[in-house]
Length: 162
Image 1: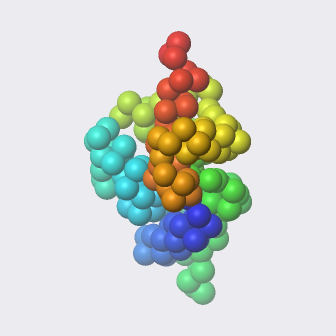
Image 2: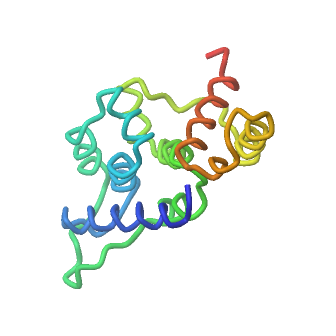
């Protein structure tokens, strides 16, 4: 996931909070943006029947305040950190699942936070290895959707006993 995409997620999450008249742009807004803008996460959540109603309920469940008269919303430090440093959409999803409310809501739909998660270095190494062996073309090494799918494959491999 490029910083451009992360900026787009951030902007969409902020617009969502403002449209809902909420002062803080939190993990639920970021999850809504991720589900709406990223096909990998959107498809994953849809397959588990996480719909707009579920996401709206999450936005209502997390504590917030009314939007200030100046109309400015505040990106929570945790969400800012996630969107500034995550490398792909699945990494963003997993970091958002650190929020207990989101973790429980997604677990109710069968999306469990894996016990062991690959590091960005491991995802990079797996991507390079797939490229070197000819499984993927060099042009796709930076593809965010491919990187997210590689992360999911590594999660599966690292959590075989679950």
